[in-house]
Image (cartoon, rainbow, N blue to C red):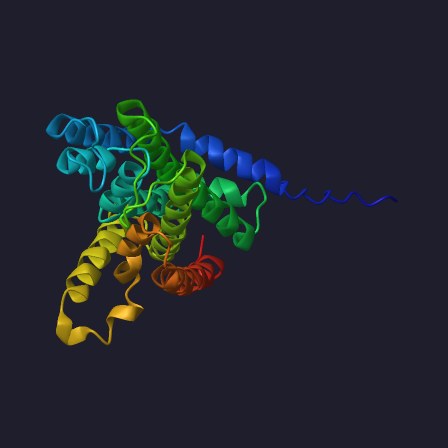
Length: 286
């Protein structure tokens, strides 16, 4: 007599899971609103700087209209996107990364949709990998929106004649775009680290607001500690300490010391956050 056996369930392909995660992220109204608000920031900065000091003839470093030229350069296609990235990195970009990490695990746990992933079936380790990919992709999108809108706004307002560095040299458009890309890549790595920490916290709670409050609280505390000279020995270990190294991309030549240290510190935070998230995901019940 033949024995009927239940066929083994097929494991869902990873590419399908990644596509599903991206569709889930970018179909959320909150995601589109956040990206839209981030894109408005460099436009407001560029318009405000242009109105404050319109560029005049001879307006460059050392020129007869140096003040207007400097304001024009600040609203140009090189400085404007880097300045917008630097300003938003203090709060808004970490908030976006924390929001994405909170939605990835805690948010879906609270709504019960995370259990559906496990029924796909998807291994817990692969589930975390898919969620981490979603967080990483969203942070890349956030940085790309600010940098891209900043470059376009600067070029529309001031053209290619104001691509000055802090060292007083003038760059070509291609070199300027390379500098902006370097700044964006540097901050993306920092946000990946923030997102990894957010995932670690998100794996331990069902409340997304707890994740966001914890990450933002940590950013604020680190910023305060970074301003205390008595704790100078601690500064190299704070992930926020190197964020202002983004300004180095505006120098000629670019000093890589601060950028390299920032990437290494962010990598340490990212590995630690990922390990903590993995340990919790594979050991939690349900």
